[in-house]
Amino acid sequence: MMLSRCRALLLFVCVCLLSTAHGQTKKLRLFIIGNSFSGNAATYLPVLAEEGGYELEIGRAELGGCSLERHWRLADTTEEASRAYKGRSLKEMLAEGKWDVVTMQQYSLLSGDPDTYRPYAKKLYDLIKSLQPDATIVLHQTWAYRTDAKGFGKINRKERAAHAQEMYNHSRAAYHTIANELEVRVIPVGDAFWMMNGDPVWAYKKDSAYNFDNPVAPALPEQKNSLHVGYRWANGTLRFDANHANTAGCYLGSLVWYRFLFQAPVKDVKFRPEQITEEMGEQLKRVAAAVSL
Image (cartoon, rainbow, N blue to C red; front, top):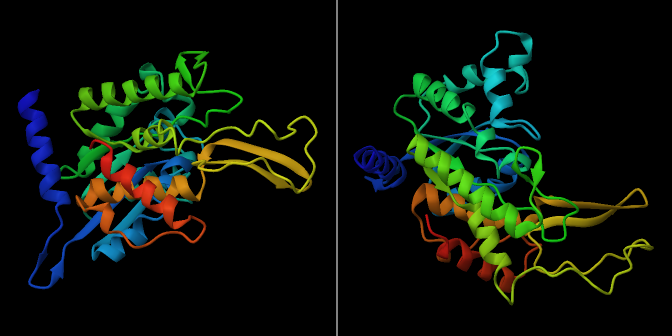
């Protein structure tokens, strides 16, 4: 297994160390099998790649709330339902040209239970290899819900994590368990989110002064340093999304993907979404640079 992992790592380095030769930058074709979380995490990846001088093409097979099991069942059927990806099938998209890197991930609600990955992660892995034998396959590690979420992901069949720390611990362990079984690497976005959350200065803290029982529009609770969408007003109702990434979370995820795929130093990145302060942007770059790949 160690030899196989070394070979996989060597292949990944060969694919992802994009170098400029004779004034030409190598093109990376990236195919993403995921859901809204992969959409969040790779939001700014094209901008970062362009700034870094890399040519990037992205193919996407993303369905909201889609699990590894559902992706596999869609791929394994000849019914019309298999064309769920905007009228196309997963096999059809995977077979287009040569993809250099293919990513897949688990639905966040199930991410803490390794049994939900089996046997679907392996089946998808085998399908990808049958269509793209030279592609490097990696797992995208999703993140835990915000610390003030009303509920957290499953960790043992129907049992749910009691808090964000437990969701993160189980999710991380599950991703690495499956990665070891498949002998693939992990894009550690979940680690980056939790590293930010563990910083005493930069961690999000729930606003204890806000009246959540009787909120009055348009006032919102303080959500400084949040990486998740959190609270917002919509049609006179206070909505709460503790799961999906906000602009800061999308930026952090994209920085991790950029560093992972191109082995590029994120400290040199100049692009920063205008909603993020310069100070926050620098902290997010520090976290993306510090997380272990």
